Length: 443
Image (cartoon, rainbow, N blue to C red; front, side, top):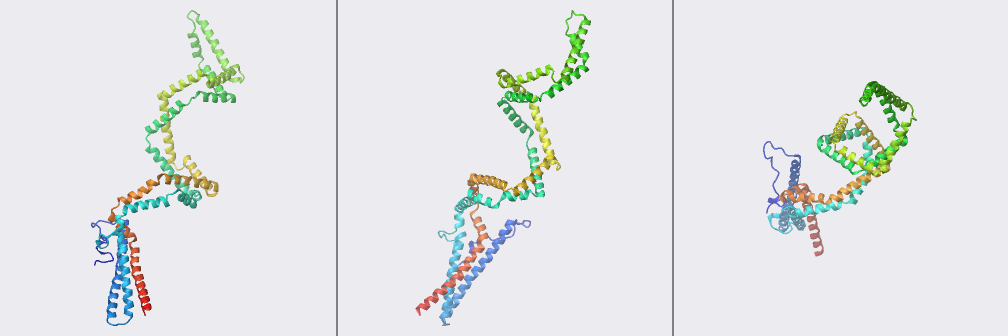
Protein backbone atom coordinates (compact mmCIF):
# COMPACT_ATOMS: atom_id res chain seq x y z
CA UNK A 1 0.00 0.00 0.00
CA UNK A 2 1.26 3.44 -0.82
CA UNK A 3 2.02 5.93 1.93
CA UNK A 4 -1.33 6.86 3.54
CA UNK A 5 0.15 10.13 4.60
CA UNK A 6 0.21 11.33 1.07
CA UNK A 7 1.21 8.60 -1.34
CA UNK A 8 2.02 9.00 -4.96
CA UNK A 9 -0.87 11.39 -5.53
CA UNK A 10 0.41 14.18 -3.30
CA UNK A 11 1.32 16.28 -6.34
CA UNK A 12 4.74 17.63 -7.27
CA UNK A 13 6.97 18.65 -4.44
CA UNK A 14 8.76 21.95 -4.27
CA UNK A 15 11.96 21.67 -6.20
CA UNK A 16 14.92 23.94 -6.83
CA UNK A 17 14.55 26.97 -9.04
CA UNK A 18 14.44 26.39 -12.79
CA UNK A 19 17.93 27.74 -13.36
CA UNK A 20 20.93 28.91 -11.43
CA UNK A 21 19.87 32.52 -11.80
CA UNK A 22 16.20 31.96 -10.94
CA UNK A 23 14.90 33.61 -7.81
CA UNK A 24 11.59 32.62 -6.19
CA UNK A 25 9.13 35.40 -5.67
CA UNK A 26 7.83 36.11 -2.17
CA UNK A 27 4.56 34.28 -2.94
CA UNK A 28 6.32 31.24 -4.40
CA UNK A 29 8.70 31.09 -1.45
CA UNK A 30 5.79 31.27 1.00
CA UNK A 31 3.95 28.50 -0.87
CA UNK A 32 7.08 26.33 -0.86
CA UNK A 33 7.42 26.80 2.90
CA UNK A 34 3.75 25.89 3.42
CA UNK A 35 4.17 22.71 1.35
CA UNK A 36 7.15 21.72 3.47
CA UNK A 37 5.04 22.22 6.58
CA UNK A 38 2.28 20.05 5.12
CA UNK A 39 4.75 17.27 4.33
CA UNK A 40 6.13 17.35 7.88
CA UNK A 41 2.65 16.99 9.34
CA UNK A 42 1.89 14.15 6.90
CA UNK A 43 5.00 12.33 8.12
CA UNK A 44 3.87 12.74 11.75
CA UNK A 45 0.31 11.57 11.00
CA UNK A 46 1.56 8.60 8.97
CA UNK A 47 4.06 7.80 11.70
CA UNK A 48 1.23 7.53 14.24
CA UNK A 49 -0.63 5.15 11.89
CA UNK A 50 2.46 3.00 11.51
CA UNK A 51 3.05 3.08 15.26
CA UNK A 52 -0.55 1.95 15.86
CA UNK A 53 -0.03 -0.86 13.33
CA UNK A 54 3.16 -2.05 15.03
CA UNK A 55 1.55 -1.85 18.48
CA UNK A 56 -1.46 -3.82 17.20
CA UNK A 57 0.78 -6.56 15.76
CA UNK A 58 2.85 -6.82 18.94
CA UNK A 59 -0.24 -6.82 21.17
CA UNK A 60 -1.87 -9.57 19.15
CA UNK A 61 1.34 -11.61 19.32
CA UNK A 62 1.59 -11.05 23.07
CA UNK A 63 -2.06 -12.01 23.53
CA UNK A 64 -1.59 -15.24 21.59
CA UNK A 65 1.52 -15.95 23.63
CA UNK A 66 -0.48 -15.69 26.87
CA UNK A 67 0.94 -12.40 28.08
CA UNK A 68 -2.25 -11.59 29.96
CA UNK A 69 -5.50 -9.60 29.62
CA UNK A 70 -3.67 -6.31 29.09
CA UNK A 71 -2.66 -7.40 25.60
CA UNK A 72 -6.29 -7.50 24.49
CA UNK A 73 -6.87 -3.95 25.71
CA UNK A 74 -3.79 -2.70 23.89
CA UNK A 75 -4.71 -4.54 20.70
CA UNK A 76 -8.25 -3.13 20.74
CA UNK A 77 -6.99 0.42 21.24
CA UNK A 78 -4.38 0.07 18.49
CA UNK A 79 -6.87 -1.49 16.09
CA UNK A 80 -9.40 1.33 16.59
CA UNK A 81 -6.59 3.88 16.23
CA UNK A 82 -5.67 2.30 12.89
CA UNK A 83 -9.29 2.47 11.72
CA UNK A 84 -9.63 6.11 12.79
CA UNK A 85 -6.36 7.06 11.12
CA UNK A 86 -7.30 5.34 7.85
CA UNK A 87 -10.80 6.85 7.81
CA UNK A 88 -9.52 10.36 8.41
CA UNK A 89 -6.73 9.86 5.86
CA UNK A 90 -9.36 8.94 3.31
CA UNK A 91 -11.53 11.97 4.20
CA UNK A 92 -8.63 14.45 4.04
CA UNK A 93 -7.15 13.00 0.86
CA UNK A 94 -10.55 12.91 -0.87
CA UNK A 95 -10.74 16.69 -0.66
CA UNK A 96 -7.76 17.16 -2.97
CA UNK A 97 -7.39 13.96 -5.06
CA UNK A 98 -8.64 10.42 -5.53
CA UNK A 99 -7.24 8.17 -2.75
CA UNK A 100 -4.83 5.63 -4.22
CA UNK A 101 -5.92 6.87 -7.66
CA UNK A 102 -9.17 4.88 -7.46
CA UNK A 103 -12.28 6.41 -9.13
CA UNK A 104 -14.28 6.43 -5.92
CA UNK A 105 -17.42 8.64 -6.08
CA UNK A 106 -17.37 11.96 -4.25
CA UNK A 107 -13.58 12.16 -4.06
CA UNK A 108 -11.17 14.78 -5.49
CA UNK A 109 -13.82 17.28 -4.45
CA UNK A 110 -11.82 20.49 -4.97
CA UNK A 111 -10.52 19.68 -8.49
CA UNK A 112 -13.87 18.38 -9.74
CA UNK A 113 -16.08 20.93 -7.98
CA UNK A 114 -13.77 23.94 -8.49
CA UNK A 115 -16.20 25.92 -10.63
CA UNK A 116 -19.12 25.18 -8.33
CA UNK A 117 -17.03 26.25 -5.36
CA UNK A 118 -16.17 29.47 -7.21
CA UNK A 119 -19.86 30.22 -7.78
CA UNK A 120 -20.64 29.42 -4.16
CA UNK A 121 -17.80 31.66 -2.98
CA UNK A 122 -19.02 34.49 -5.21
CA UNK A 123 -22.59 34.11 -3.91
CA UNK A 124 -21.33 33.98 -0.32
CA UNK A 125 -19.30 37.17 -0.73
CA UNK A 126 -22.18 38.91 -2.49
CA UNK A 127 -24.74 38.00 0.16
CA UNK A 128 -22.62 38.51 3.26
CA UNK A 129 -20.14 41.25 2.33
CA UNK A 130 -21.64 43.21 -0.58
CA UNK A 131 -25.12 43.87 0.75
CA UNK A 132 -26.30 47.44 1.38
CA UNK A 133 -27.09 46.80 5.05
CA UNK A 134 -23.67 45.27 5.76
CA UNK A 135 -21.82 48.11 4.03
CA UNK A 136 -23.81 50.81 5.85
CA UNK A 137 -23.37 49.11 9.21
CA UNK A 138 -19.63 48.70 8.81
CA UNK A 139 -19.05 52.25 7.57
CA UNK A 140 -21.23 53.69 10.32
CA UNK A 141 -19.25 51.77 12.94
CA UNK A 142 -15.95 53.07 11.55
CA UNK A 143 -16.95 56.75 11.83
CA UNK A 144 -15.03 57.89 8.77
CA UNK A 145 -16.17 61.51 9.06
CA UNK A 146 -14.64 61.99 12.50
CA UNK A 147 -11.43 60.13 11.62
CA UNK A 148 -11.03 61.95 8.34
CA UNK A 149 -11.55 65.30 10.07
CA UNK A 150 -8.92 64.54 12.70
CA UNK A 151 -6.52 63.39 9.99
CA UNK A 152 -7.06 66.47 7.82
CA UNK A 153 -6.72 68.83 10.78
CA UNK A 154 -3.04 67.83 11.00
CA UNK A 155 -1.01 70.41 8.97
CA UNK A 156 1.36 67.72 7.73
CA UNK A 157 -1.53 65.69 6.32
CA UNK A 158 -3.12 68.80 4.80
CA UNK A 159 0.20 69.53 3.07
CA UNK A 160 0.27 66.01 1.62
CA UNK A 161 -3.29 66.23 0.33
CA UNK A 162 -2.61 69.67 -1.18
CA UNK A 163 0.53 68.40 -2.88
CA UNK A 164 -1.23 65.33 -4.28
CA UNK A 165 -4.21 67.39 -5.45
CA UNK A 166 -1.88 69.85 -7.18
CA UNK A 167 0.00 67.01 -8.86
CA UNK A 168 -3.27 65.48 -10.03
CA UNK A 169 -4.49 68.82 -11.35
CA UNK A 170 -1.23 69.41 -13.22
CA UNK A 171 -1.39 65.93 -14.68
CA UNK A 172 -4.95 66.36 -15.90
CA UNK A 173 -4.29 69.76 -17.45
CA UNK A 174 -1.13 68.55 -19.18
CA UNK A 175 -2.75 65.41 -20.50
CA UNK A 176 -5.74 67.25 -21.97
CA UNK A 177 -5.19 68.45 -25.49
CA UNK A 178 -5.77 72.17 -25.92
CA UNK A 179 -7.60 71.70 -29.20
CA UNK A 180 -10.10 69.28 -27.64
CA UNK A 181 -10.79 71.48 -24.63
CA UNK A 182 -11.05 74.61 -26.74
CA UNK A 183 -13.51 72.90 -29.05
CA UNK A 184 -15.64 71.70 -26.13
CA UNK A 185 -15.57 75.05 -24.34
CA UNK A 186 -16.25 76.98 -27.53
CA UNK A 187 -19.14 74.72 -28.45
CA UNK A 188 -20.60 74.90 -24.94
CA UNK A 189 -20.42 78.71 -24.84
CA UNK A 190 -21.82 79.04 -28.35
CA UNK A 191 -24.66 76.58 -27.69
CA UNK A 192 -25.53 78.26 -24.41
CA UNK A 193 -25.48 81.72 -25.99
CA UNK A 194 -27.52 80.62 -29.00
CA UNK A 195 -30.07 78.82 -26.87
CA UNK A 196 -30.79 81.77 -24.60
CA UNK A 197 -32.13 85.17 -25.66
CA UNK A 198 -29.86 87.88 -24.33
CA UNK A 199 -31.90 91.03 -25.01
CA UNK A 200 -34.28 90.78 -21.99
CA UNK A 201 -31.42 90.07 -19.61
CA UNK A 202 -29.38 92.93 -20.98
CA UNK A 203 -32.43 95.18 -20.74
CA UNK A 204 -33.06 94.31 -17.08
CA UNK A 205 -29.41 94.86 -16.24
CA UNK A 206 -29.34 98.20 -18.08
CA UNK A 207 -32.55 99.26 -16.31
CA UNK A 208 -31.00 98.59 -12.90
CA UNK A 209 -27.80 100.41 -13.88
CA UNK A 210 -29.73 103.48 -14.98
CA UNK A 211 -31.94 103.40 -11.88
CA UNK A 212 -28.85 103.26 -9.63
CA UNK A 213 -27.02 105.93 -11.64
CA UNK A 214 -24.21 103.56 -12.41
CA UNK A 215 -23.95 104.82 -15.99
CA UNK A 216 -23.08 108.36 -14.92
CA UNK A 217 -19.43 107.59 -14.40
CA UNK A 218 -19.29 106.36 -17.96
CA UNK A 219 -20.94 109.56 -19.17
CA UNK A 220 -18.46 111.61 -17.12
CA UNK A 221 -15.58 109.75 -18.67
CA UNK A 222 -16.94 110.22 -22.18
CA UNK A 223 -17.45 113.95 -21.61
CA UNK A 224 -13.93 114.42 -20.24
CA UNK A 225 -12.36 112.43 -23.05
CA UNK A 226 -14.45 114.23 -25.71
CA UNK A 227 -13.50 117.68 -24.38
CA UNK A 228 -9.84 116.79 -24.13
CA UNK A 229 -9.85 115.37 -27.64
CA UNK A 230 -11.52 118.51 -29.06
CA UNK A 231 -8.98 120.75 -27.35
CA UNK A 232 -6.12 118.64 -28.66
CA UNK A 233 -7.44 118.25 -32.23
CA UNK A 234 -9.05 121.65 -32.88
CA UNK A 235 -7.43 122.03 -36.32
CA UNK A 236 -8.75 118.67 -37.43
CA UNK A 237 -12.30 119.56 -36.40
CA UNK A 238 -12.21 122.91 -38.22
CA UNK A 239 -10.70 121.33 -41.36
CA UNK A 240 -13.50 118.74 -41.32
CA UNK A 241 -16.17 121.47 -41.07
CA UNK A 242 -14.60 123.54 -43.81
CA UNK A 243 -14.20 120.50 -46.04
CA UNK A 244 -17.93 119.83 -45.82
CA UNK A 245 -18.93 123.38 -46.84
CA UNK A 246 -20.39 124.08 -50.32
CA UNK A 247 -17.85 125.02 -52.98
CA UNK A 248 -19.50 128.35 -53.79
CA UNK A 249 -19.05 129.82 -50.26
CA UNK A 250 -16.05 132.12 -49.63
CA UNK A 251 -13.18 130.51 -47.75
CA UNK A 252 -13.18 133.11 -44.95
CA UNK A 253 -16.87 132.31 -44.34
CA UNK A 254 -16.05 128.58 -44.13
CA UNK A 255 -13.25 129.38 -41.68
CA UNK A 256 -15.54 131.51 -39.52
CA UNK A 257 -18.21 128.77 -39.51
CA UNK A 258 -15.60 126.13 -38.65
CA UNK A 259 -14.29 128.19 -35.75
CA UNK A 260 -17.82 128.81 -34.50
CA UNK A 261 -18.75 125.14 -34.66
CA UNK A 262 -15.55 124.14 -32.92
CA UNK A 263 -16.06 126.67 -30.10
CA UNK A 264 -19.66 125.49 -29.62
CA UNK A 265 -18.54 121.86 -29.45
CA UNK A 266 -15.86 122.70 -26.85
CA UNK A 267 -18.36 124.72 -24.84
CA UNK A 268 -20.99 121.99 -25.06
CA UNK A 269 -18.63 119.21 -23.90
CA UNK A 270 -17.26 121.44 -21.12
CA UNK A 271 -20.79 122.18 -19.86
CA UNK A 272 -21.72 118.49 -19.96
CA UNK A 273 -18.51 117.69 -18.10
CA UNK A 274 -19.04 120.30 -15.41
CA UNK A 275 -22.86 120.35 -15.03
CA UNK A 276 -24.37 117.17 -13.52
CA UNK A 277 -27.86 118.52 -14.33
CA UNK A 278 -27.11 119.37 -17.95
CA UNK A 279 -30.13 118.72 -20.24
CA UNK A 280 -28.03 116.51 -22.49
CA UNK A 281 -27.27 114.24 -19.54
CA UNK A 282 -30.98 113.97 -18.88
CA UNK A 283 -31.50 113.06 -22.52
CA UNK A 284 -28.90 110.31 -22.18
CA UNK A 285 -30.70 109.00 -19.09
CA UNK A 286 -34.03 108.93 -20.92
CA UNK A 287 -32.49 107.28 -23.95
CA UNK A 288 -30.88 104.53 -21.90
CA UNK A 289 -34.08 104.00 -19.89
CA UNK A 290 -36.19 103.76 -23.05
CA UNK A 291 -33.65 101.43 -24.65
CA UNK A 292 -33.73 99.17 -21.58
CA UNK A 293 -37.51 98.90 -21.87
CA UNK A 294 -37.31 98.19 -25.61
CA UNK A 295 -34.78 95.43 -25.03
CA UNK A 296 -37.29 93.72 -22.77
CA UNK A 297 -40.55 94.34 -24.61
CA UNK A 298 -40.03 95.50 -28.21
CA UNK A 299 -39.95 92.48 -30.63
CA UNK A 300 -38.04 94.36 -33.33
CA UNK A 301 -35.31 95.50 -30.95
CA UNK A 302 -34.97 92.01 -29.46
CA UNK A 303 -34.74 90.46 -32.92
CA UNK A 304 -32.01 92.90 -33.98
CA UNK A 305 -30.05 92.11 -30.81
CA UNK A 306 -30.33 88.37 -31.53
CA UNK A 307 -29.03 88.88 -35.08
CA UNK A 308 -26.16 90.92 -33.72
CA UNK A 309 -25.40 88.19 -31.17
CA UNK A 310 -25.30 85.49 -33.85
CA UNK A 311 -23.10 87.61 -36.06
CA UNK A 312 -20.66 88.16 -33.20
CA UNK A 313 -20.55 84.44 -32.28
CA UNK A 314 -19.90 83.50 -35.88
CA UNK A 315 -16.87 85.74 -36.14
CA UNK A 316 -13.51 84.02 -35.96
CA UNK A 317 -12.20 86.66 -33.58
CA UNK A 318 -14.70 85.54 -30.92
CA UNK A 319 -13.67 81.87 -31.24
CA UNK A 320 -10.03 82.90 -31.12
CA UNK A 321 -10.78 84.83 -27.95
CA UNK A 322 -12.33 81.73 -26.37
CA UNK A 323 -9.31 79.63 -27.34
CA UNK A 324 -6.84 82.17 -26.04
CA UNK A 325 -8.81 82.46 -22.80
CA UNK A 326 -8.53 78.69 -22.20
CA UNK A 327 -4.81 78.74 -22.94
CA UNK A 328 -4.30 81.59 -20.50
CA UNK A 329 -6.40 79.92 -17.79
CA UNK A 330 -4.61 76.59 -18.20
CA UNK A 331 -1.19 78.19 -17.99
CA UNK A 332 -2.20 80.19 -14.94
CA UNK A 333 -3.61 77.14 -13.14
CA UNK A 334 -0.60 74.95 -13.95
CA UNK A 335 1.79 77.61 -12.72
CA UNK A 336 -0.23 78.06 -9.53
CA UNK A 337 -0.32 74.30 -8.93
CA UNK A 338 3.46 74.04 -9.31
CA UNK A 339 4.20 76.97 -6.99
CA UNK A 340 4.09 75.91 -3.33
CA UNK A 341 3.50 79.52 -2.25
CA UNK A 342 0.82 80.30 -4.80
CA UNK A 343 -2.52 81.63 -3.65
CA UNK A 344 -4.25 78.55 -5.06
CA UNK A 345 -2.25 76.07 -2.97
CA UNK A 346 -2.28 78.25 0.14
CA UNK A 347 -6.05 78.66 -0.02
CA UNK A 348 -6.50 74.94 -0.72
CA UNK A 349 -4.37 74.05 2.31
CA UNK A 350 -6.23 76.52 4.51
CA UNK A 351 -9.56 75.15 3.32
CA UNK A 352 -8.49 71.58 4.09
CA UNK A 353 -7.34 72.53 7.59
CA UNK A 354 -10.59 74.40 8.21
CA UNK A 355 -12.64 71.49 6.90
CA UNK A 356 -10.68 69.01 9.01
CA UNK A 357 -11.17 71.09 12.17
CA UNK A 358 -14.91 71.33 11.52
CA UNK A 359 -15.27 67.64 10.73
CA UNK A 360 -13.35 66.67 13.87
CA UNK A 361 -15.77 68.54 16.17
CA UNK A 362 -19.03 69.11 14.28
CA UNK A 363 -21.21 66.02 14.75
CA UNK A 364 -23.75 67.24 12.20
CA UNK A 365 -21.06 67.58 9.54
CA UNK A 366 -19.64 64.18 10.50
CA UNK A 367 -23.06 62.61 10.06
CA UNK A 368 -23.46 64.32 6.69
CA UNK A 369 -20.07 63.10 5.45
CA UNK A 370 -20.77 59.58 6.75
CA UNK A 371 -24.10 59.64 4.96
CA UNK A 372 -22.48 60.69 1.68
CA UNK A 373 -19.87 57.94 1.94
CA UNK A 374 -22.48 55.34 2.88
CA UNK A 375 -24.68 56.33 -0.05
CA UNK A 376 -21.72 56.24 -2.46
CA UNK A 377 -20.47 52.88 -1.20
CA UNK A 378 -23.99 51.42 -1.22
CA UNK A 379 -24.53 52.61 -4.76
CA UNK A 380 -21.28 51.03 -5.93
CA UNK A 381 -22.01 47.76 -4.11
CA UNK A 382 -25.60 47.41 -5.26
CA UNK A 383 -24.85 48.51 -8.83
CA UNK A 384 -21.71 46.49 -9.42
CA UNK A 385 -22.23 43.53 -7.05
CA UNK A 386 -22.78 41.10 -9.92
CA UNK A 387 -19.60 42.30 -11.64
CA UNK A 388 -17.61 41.91 -8.42
CA UNK A 389 -18.89 38.42 -7.69
CA UNK A 390 -18.47 37.38 -11.33
CA UNK A 391 -14.83 38.45 -11.03
CA UNK A 392 -14.44 35.88 -8.24
CA UNK A 393 -16.23 33.09 -10.10
CA UNK A 394 -14.47 33.80 -13.41
CA UNK A 395 -11.09 33.97 -11.68
CA UNK A 396 -11.66 30.62 -9.96
CA UNK A 397 -12.98 29.13 -13.21
CA UNK A 398 -9.77 30.18 -14.95
CA UNK A 399 -7.55 28.39 -12.45
CA UNK A 400 -6.04 25.03 -13.30
CA UNK A 401 -7.82 22.35 -11.25
CA UNK A 402 -4.67 20.55 -10.06
CA UNK A 403 -2.84 23.80 -9.34
CA UNK A 404 -5.84 25.08 -7.39
CA UNK A 405 -5.94 21.89 -5.35
CA UNK A 406 -2.24 22.15 -4.56
CA UNK A 407 -2.46 25.81 -3.54
CA UNK A 408 -5.44 25.21 -1.24
CA UNK A 409 -3.74 22.18 0.26
CA UNK A 410 -0.60 24.23 0.87
CA UNK A 411 -2.66 26.75 2.86
CA UNK A 412 -4.91 24.43 4.89
CA UNK A 413 -3.30 20.99 4.51
CA UNK A 414 -1.16 21.33 7.66
CA UNK A 415 -4.22 21.90 9.82
CA UNK A 416 -6.06 19.06 8.09
CA UNK A 417 -3.29 16.65 9.08
CA UNK A 418 -4.26 17.29 12.71
CA UNK A 419 -7.58 15.65 11.83
CA UNK A 420 -5.67 12.46 11.02
CA UNK A 421 -3.65 12.73 14.23
CA UNK A 422 -6.78 13.34 16.28
CA UNK A 423 -8.53 10.50 14.46
CA UNK A 424 -5.75 8.11 15.48
CA UNK A 425 -5.81 9.21 19.13
CA UNK A 426 -9.60 9.45 19.46
CA UNK A 427 -10.06 6.16 17.62
CA UNK A 428 -7.65 4.43 20.00
CA UNK A 429 -9.43 5.85 23.06
CA UNK A 430 -12.85 4.92 21.65
CA UNK A 431 -11.66 1.40 20.84
CA UNK A 432 -10.24 1.00 24.33
CA UNK A 433 -13.50 2.22 25.88
CA UNK A 434 -15.63 -0.10 23.74
CA UNK A 435 -13.40 -3.13 24.45
CA UNK A 436 -13.37 -2.32 28.18
CA UNK A 437 -17.17 -1.98 28.26
CA UNK A 438 -17.64 -5.25 26.38
CA UNK A 439 -15.29 -7.07 28.75
CA UNK A 440 -17.01 -5.54 31.75
CA UNK A 441 -20.51 -6.56 30.67
CA UNK A 442 -19.34 -9.94 29.40
CA UNK A 443 -17.70 -10.69 32.73
